[in-house]
Image (cartoon, rainbow, N blue to C red):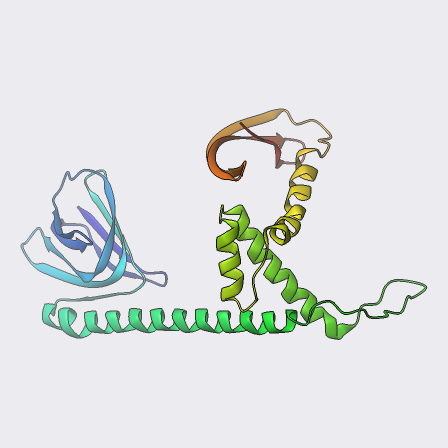
Length: 261
């Protein structure tokens, strides 16, 4: 069998005479012999070991990744980081410990980033608590004028509205949306306020569905899927049919129609 171990930056190991390979995924260790059925699995942080035609064993430590078997003769391992060595003890102790440590550091960094994001959202909400202000904005003869110090507030308010709209589209109940808003530092939001904020979505969807389709579109593809939608105050599953048209003259495609039922 042929084995290739690659990372985003380099090819770490290549072997053309692999007689047996042992690797490890979430379910445990497994072996691969010539003629193995095609399959794909996610590896854990572990050491993959293979034996060549002469009986010699070789090892490579992988920081997770994907293993794929094709045609019973080709094994490919794609991983974030890998180190090949014939010193199995060093790989199982020092290298795997370093890989686990890096994963923990990255997980901690993601957690810190999420905390900073939530802190930023809370700061945004403090600004929005000021409510509406009546300002006299000068009218120019040409163009328009908007006070620069309000641009940041305008952007943050759009971000908050986008969060509420995304939750509503995802089928989150009004009560859950209210809890989400409270978690971001606001006093809460009513059903009517949610409906008012999400009215823009309906306008954009209707504009898309009712827009004119001009020119010749000789090719049309139809596809269908099932979506969870809000209907009559309940979340139900409906079929969505999507039509995609292609214009050969300009080499472009466009979603021509979306229909549910």
